Image 1: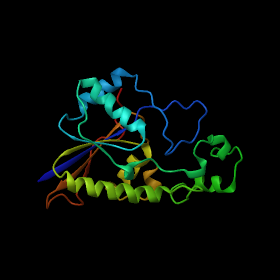
Image 2: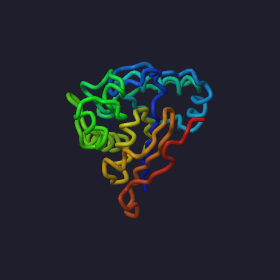
Image 3: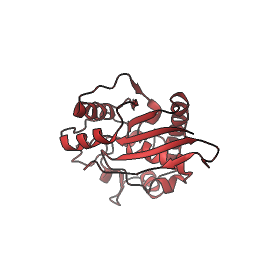
Length: 209
């Protein structure tokens, strides 16, 4: 039996006092919670393939995990297919401006928030699209690093998409998962005749503190 173990970590908190939709915008994150990073570093294997996305908040989080135990991520693989969902023209606007919670906004924004999985923001992508590209990345990286530990620092959207891929969920059901910042989710791909559909789910949204 060969196990390829995925350790998914959501990036550190993003200061967002105005409650803006940032999606694929490259915004800063707060990596000052030393205890949280020490706890993460203790749970994650040292000998692993390290993956982040091109958005800097995932890379800063990954390097903070290494700093907590005095190691470095070398080499570091950046995977664009694992980025957060693109909200297109809505990025940078507040949720109130978009009408996300019934404060007005365009009809398109209301349709998106009522049925987010299949709706596509103007100039963006749907959550269904995210599931497709995350599934492609998981298949490629699992084959390339078969039998290894893969530590992937990513985003709430991409981790929910990974759960949809592994559990065969509808996109709407996958959006029901809470994925907190600095939480850990474990998904193992089992290569064995007795493995059933091939995936085993460990902790989901395990808090760092």
